Image (cartoon, rainbow, N blue to C red; front, side, top):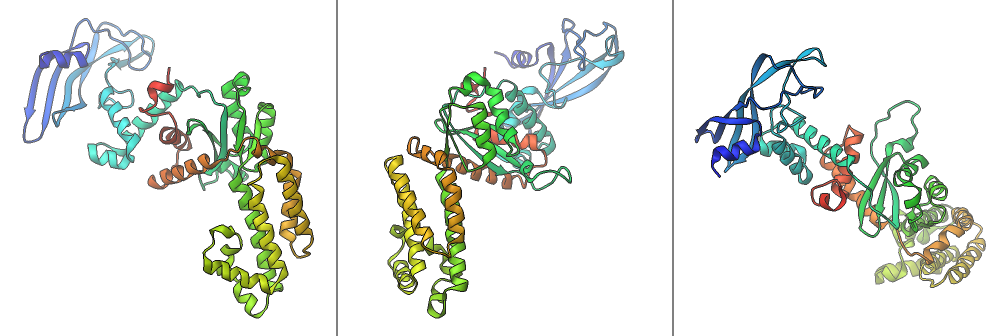
Length: 423
């Protein structure tokens, strides 16, 4: 294929009349002329234009580089009167990007593809283009991909929130509005949807999109102890099993342990015991005994010899770890009751008593862990990726773009998965 035929193939409706090369500038200019048979279509309303030409203007369009040479198409773009718009309009050219008339659609796609793997500022510096133009290419490309995106079939999902923005969009705006709800597929380990806020409506949006028939296919939903998410699952997926995440439960338990340790340190401990239980040693009291070093174990043993309530604190903490080692729900229930008895024997365990009461009220949900031992560890890992993405961009002003960017990096809105998940 000759060079002219190649250019004609990538610029349909135009013929090549001349080419110029500047070796010192690494530049190629290809001069085109519109063919008489090319249809004259309005660039705004896509209505057929009048046949009489009103005027024309010069256009220089950047295309993909050829052997390291910057390549431009130069031609006269005719203007005609549009009977639909009642204005003089330029003709529509399919191979020019709709985002800007200065680059071809192929080149705009390549720039947007580059934005998948590197920050926009880096891509702009590498290609010599405007960062704002690259942002538009990337944003519009992801919006087009979202129009054809279909959430894959899922059976096990995890739901978690991630902090999205600090700025308020109103004086009375709830803090929940400043979060994103991230839904992940536990089997494919990808983000399948992102909703604004962490309210019940955020998860309702996901269930509404997939429809009631596919909601019936969902077997397990792993989440933290957020009531709004649980209400949404019970309303939209009554057959699904809600499983509380182990990490969040242990996090709340450790906070209760630490609150009671601080109370004992402030009002009960004296002299040497006060030194051994102060703030810098607080992590030892929530650390599993098997994970402590010999020095740490000796330190804890010294504390336990001095005070009986610290001994109960250690006993309760180890009992909670053993709770998750239970093989059946009945075995776990017996261990949990034993924890409650130990907590009741100590008058000064105010936080643990509150924690045990709340946990006992939610036992019907917690016991599901022994049927489906799943966690939101995948969502927590995705949250770290999202936080890194936000830091890399120094924050996002456009929340719609941020949502799409999360689905691009952690989900399916990218070139790697396009053939698998787009129709």
